[in-house]
Amino acid sequence: MPVNEFVVRVGGDTLEGGIIRTGEFLAHALARCGLEVFTFRTYPAEIKGGQAMIQVRTAERPIYSHGDDVDILICFDEEAWEIHRRDFNPYGVLIYDNKFQPRNFPGTAFAYGFPFSEIAKVRLRNPVSKNMVILGAFSALFSLPKEVFEQLIRDYWGRRGEKVVNANITALNEGYEEGKKVEKEDQYRIEVRPMRDRLILSGNEAICYGAIAAGCKVFAGYPITPASDILEWMMEHLPHFDGTPLQVEDEIAAIGAVLGASFAGAKAMTATSGPGFSLMTEFLGHAAMAELPCVIADIQRAGPSTGMPTKSEQSDLYQAVYGGHGDVPRVVLAPSTVQGCFYVTVHAFNLAELCQSPVVILSDQSLAHRTETIPPIDLEKIIVIDREIYDPTFHSENGDSYRRYRLSETGVSPMSIPGRQGSYTAEGLEHDEFGHPNWEPENHMTMSEKRFRKLELAIRYGEFYPGFEGFRWYGPREADVGVIVWGSTAGAVREAIELAEQDGISVAALHVSMLYPLHREVVRRFINSMGRVLLPELNFTGQFAHLVRGETGLDVVSYTKVTGVPFKVREIYEAIKELARETVAVR
Image (cartoon, rainbow, N blue to C red; front, top):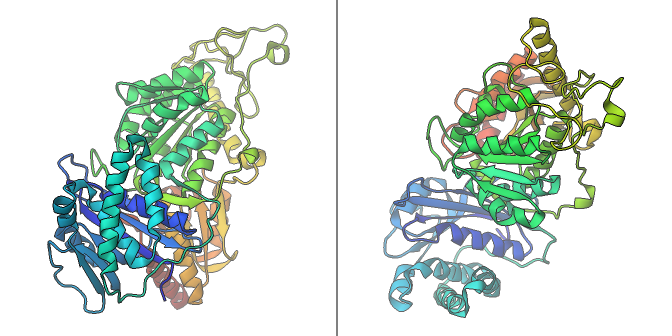
């Protein structure tokens, strides 16, 4: 019996309002019932409206992906049914506004039609309350306590006054009464469990909290989907942590402000998406040349050009790793979960400070706007690294003047703070140890080697911060099939591997979170230990597969998808099965 484990999807036109909020309320309500939740959403890029969707998966056990088939589909309109019925579980439940009748409805499923629009527009004279009417009906149908939704309404709209709160509770109650009239035939239901000690966050929110925990004091940004809510969060909350947020005129100004703040001694970051990152690449080179720590969060979306601003893709990898003129050393990290967004952001700041280099965080739309229940974060266990500051007592040699770019074994040189001892110019020109322009061939070679030596320090970062090695190896040390994965695809891979293991397939996975510099020897060892290696990613050209081949000299099987939505578990599972069959056949 499907109790406390199912996938709910809500779909409809944004002109009706409340599509996404319906799913958000549902996710928070399920979390307050002691369940784990995992969401995914997609929405139109046009202001004029269009179809939006939010999917909520819930279970009592840990879940790592948004789920495949939709068990409970809530449709605000007929177009939503036509779009989403292809993912509808043929034994599932459809809840719909009976202003339309669903065509091609499977006879094995269950359908409950309600006069949602009539209740909101005619009875309540409040068309925008339709989503609360729907949640009321859902509460009655699936035994989710109505009181949980009532408290959520108070929490969300309480500051707007009792009139707004009461209007929404009235709409909830109307839907609840309609739901009670239904003779329920399906088996889906909710049983409340003890409240778990959990946070519910989105990926972008977790990046913001990670930046605060790492000591970020300056954030500069320009609005761009799907990174805008990082800017909005920082504008509201960073001042409470003695920080300075700036909304500037464009992405070039944003990274310029970040580098200025870093030169002045502050930890600083910006957030953007692919088109904005393109504009930042010249300053990225300046950060590498001047050896200025900075963090850039690139929340990827489907491209190229304006592309599909509200859809997900993992196609900025080439730009993140190779973007820029000349040889530009940088570190590229990729979180795979909401919790990972927090910790990877802390690591990004630490690596930027440790290596005095730019660090790029590669998230994506699905992870940025996904919400998950995660365990509370123990801030006492967070290690924060600060840059090495110039002190003439320890760093001067025989009374020499300050050498900002002093050659060292690690490539890192102590930084001075403006107004204190040790002045220099953060020059974009090639320079000598003192920062003076120098175009001698031997000097350029020496300084290039110095800058790239810092990447070796990044590889060794796990020695300073135990628990972050840049990779994780799951499963046996030798297997018929190996899967290399990065970013938000990791959750679907994890569940696909569990299915494959249940089928007796010998399979292991290498989850890579430091994409550049790559732990070459680890990746080589993994590939050489597997019969065949699959590398799934959300781009057309197999960008990480190309990077792995180039860095290791070994081959992998690239598996790509560019539909704007994440992999389903069964897609990766089928690819693993096919590769396993081929491996066994060769043997």
